[in-house]
Image 1 (cartoon, rainbow, N blue to C red):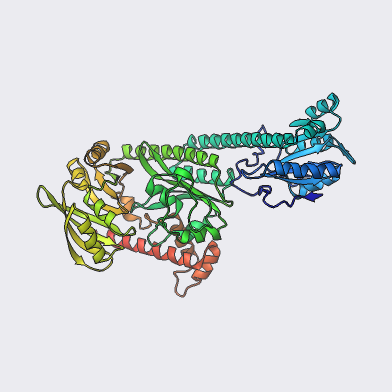
Image 2 (cartoon, helix red, strand yellow):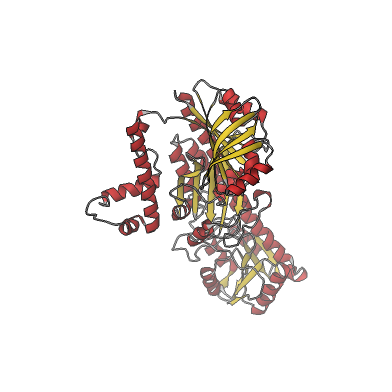
Amino acid sequence: MTRSDRSGSSGPSDPSDPSDPSDPSDPSDPSDPSDPSDPSSPFGTIRSPTRAGIAVLLVDDDETWARTQRRTLERAHDTISVTTAHGLVDARGALLAEPPDCIVCDYQLGDGTGLELLAEVREVRPEVPFVIVTGQGDERVASDAIGERVTDYVRKADVARRPTLLAQRIDALVATDRAERAVRRERRSKEALLGMLTAGSTRREFTRRICASLVDEDGYAHAWIGVPGEEGALTPLAAAGATDYLDATLDHETERLPADEPAARAFADARPVTVASIAADQPAEDGPRDAPAPASSDWRAAARRAGFASAAAVPIGHDGIRYGAIAVYAAADAVPDHDHELLDAYATTVGYALKTATWRETLLSSHDRRVEIALDDASAPLVALSSALPRTATVTATTVVPRNDAEALYLATVAGASVADLRAAVAAAPAVLSVDVYGADDPIRCGLVVTTPVPEAVAVEAGGRFERTAVEGGRARLSLVTSPSGSVGGLTDAVGNAFDGVSVTTVRSDHGDEPAARTDPTASLTDRQRQVLEVALEAGYFERPRTTNTGELAASLDVSRATVTQHLRAAERKVFTRLLRDSAG
């Protein structure tokens, strides 16, 4: 057996590549009765091609003809890589060693026939392209080959007259096989999605099933869905696969992701994001789906440690409301284009499901509704100020006081900037008239006198109650509350009529004053924080003397010691804060 060593030719795809657009068929699929992972299979898994390479097994007992055709194929098609075998036994060994994307086999072999090999291959993978080549060219051979479900049939005489004929046939057959596999895979995914949507499960159960399907059925190494948390930042709701990545990436004190993490970018920018190569210094751009990324952060190191090579994320939304983001991470470079379409379909369905759950809770609730409105209109004073500050700076306002018909006063904090930066930004923002610095520490406490109108006042006039505005990178997020009888649409329409670039990002019922919320000090814990706290309690971490330590807790949870410590500190802070507030109330 001879393996081509021509430089520059593409080798066969990795069978474990979850980004392979022609993922092995589901053995439960009636159109594909075989199980390619069956250890009893004599040929292992015969995989389908990657987008860049086609691995061909050429079987012929005429070594000279085989060698000549190998060179002809690789010269005619720069994505074809050829392995040759010279008999039936030799071919079986080649299939076990390196399963190809297409098999080209002579009819007459020294120790058998091509039809024998075809019958054996069809038992384990009926869909792999198989081409019979013969010098006889009679109708009997063609009839027998068709009976064994041969993919194509060519004569050596035709190949001799047209040297590129065989390469063209292989290319067309592999492309068709890939497309058919992609269609089957998309059909299975959408059927599973429909089943999950109609199962009537809770929001958390539904999103967990989505993530599990992306990992188990679509072959991704990791998938997760995030929704806005208390501070408006993306917070994990459900995950599957290599979830240690989230533990390593999430700041457990602030529960925030790095701003350039794919899911965080997709949610913040309201557009799909693709990182074709995580190992690169900067993300490889993928046309309009990518926006220029900020400087690389620690999420890349965590992703590489988890074995991820590429990632893609899509914002989740419905009817103009963003509910979060869905992200997938693959073990191979470049998530296939058709996977982006599938991810968009998942995001649309999840958005519909989350909207349905959210509005059902809101309509049935007698409590106030919380609304978050985003806007990026530079005529809004705080947006103009943020645009003039360093990109990492955050402006937060919790009080807006009308001074007169033309001016208003914001009581605000500015984090991630110096006083000099703030004064320079005020000078560059015409809508900000003056600044008084009350405290120069980070964050800076200040009063900002601005011109009107301001979006917060517009929202209050429309019946909303203002809670806070957070502005970062020239984009503001207003947190408002409206009564059960108030109109969310009227509130957003009023702000949208006064300012451009307005979108609703969150609508949810406010259950903050329910007795359960007041008396349960663990209500604000994330699932992971609750798990760590429960394990620590049960393991005697809080006993005196302690019967376990953080190292042992980390070992039992299969996470790092630093991760356990972060979760415990965050959980303790939340529990104590809730207890003290409730006791004071």
